[in-house]
Picture 1 (cartoon, helix red, strand yellow):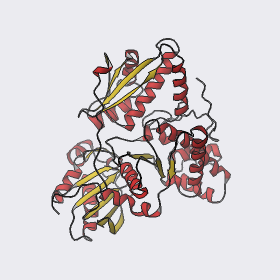
Picture 2: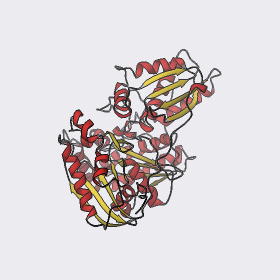
Picture 3: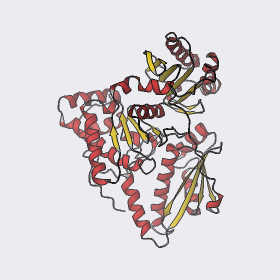
Picture 4: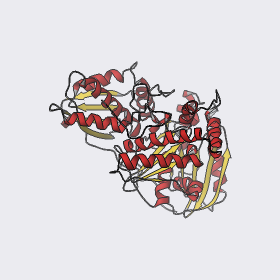
Length: 463
């Protein structure tokens, strides 16, 4: 299929926007008199279920390869957006059979099979063909009725790779905040993490007459306050992880007398902070930092029990797209919207950084941008064009009115170039979309995350 974007990323001209490839596929389907309807459900062991339905090409000939690519990229996106371990497929047994091989123990998506399936949801990913759409479970996604609770004396915290942020609030007003440096990544003793978090909570509590609730955020996957996967604890052995870390926030809740205590992914809290700061809903927050992080607040102001790990969601459909060093998959967000993207594009721009760590490469590019170096500008222009097409792709999966953009890659003059290029793509290629790109104000940057995190738990029954 021919895909012809109006805008080509100057340093990455082979980029094939997922949204345009999918639209080209849909146009081909529209001309196919034998087109079929494929219905699928992505299901978790606890009964949570997400549904998708769409048209695919008739089986046979060159159609098969196109359809497998279309559905494989779709299932990959859904896995990292919403999360689950069981795909049930109606209307296309041939596609289900092909996906079974792709998600086999040694298949192309073996990383996803084990990471999302076994590690996060407790079982390997499986693909099952069902006889008809009637055999699929109904949509059962639910919402997390967390956030926007600001009454009383609360603590909010955010756990990062280099520091722990913590704040004390009284009726929504920050009365104390601080950042404490720590080095969690390679600490093997789980007590380092437990006592470190507890120490920050105690520091904040010293500035409150009492503590009514505690809310927190951290990079990683958390399901009902349970740690499923998080890079902060990568140094802890599997045995100690299961014994001490998986339930660490239950341990801390007990230490604090069983008061309301909620922890979710930092991307969700970022989106919630943006929604609260903007006084608006339908917010997708995307952070371009060490990797790509994301979170979403729906039209009712709720955060949802989704993964929103867009770093692993495909945005480039070319066959030789850059590969992620962790999952091995190609064309996924982290290679386009993070400091990894800056390092990937730097040689094409004419920079020679050798084996310099990625964060230092980003600083060098930012310094060059301050000096008016056109090579640095090209890096940001490239990221911005790709981001514009990715936003349109995200809009196929999220209902978005406001896109909150933040993260170290967006700092300085380069961040504005990213936004300008993305807005140009959206205005010209996708005028039907009405998505406002927003940068958080200084107050939100300073205290928004802590306030939003502190607002997660509901009030205690009696305060």
